[in-house]
Amino acid sequence: NRYINLGKFETMGLDVGRAATGLAYLQETLDVQQKEYEAETLPFRKSAIGVSLAKSLHEVGRQNHQLGDAETAIGQYQNALQLLSEAIDFREKDAKLTKALIHTRFVKSEVCSSLGVAYFDVGQPDDALAHHQEALQ
Image 1 (tube, rainbow, N blue to C red):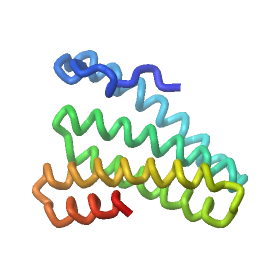
Image 2: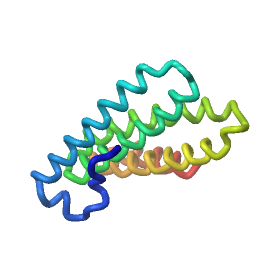
Image 3: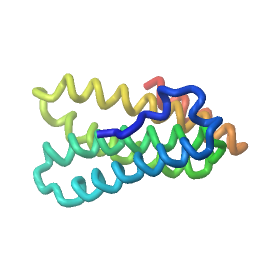
Image 4: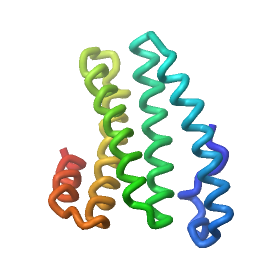
């Protein structure tokens, strides 16, 4: 569970204390999900947990980016992208997972787009363009 979804409150970034509290809650969620992901041995479940973890990483990255820390956001987006790529690889092998595959590709496109914006913000337009193009695939 996410304790608070900072992206739903436009003014959250204006209140540093509230933003820090929200990020702390999200970080706790990430820590729990990361442990669950690392402990899982069944490939199907690991894939599902990985997608959930990737979504949380993306959300934390978005909040860090909104607060002006694009460098931290890039690391979180990259971790999310790696998890999603692994989930896509797994889901492409099973025709019964078509809906899950479509959803995972959509989430990946969102992460790639966020990564493109973050790279642009840190002055890396070539990387930004590459990730925006990947988002469209």
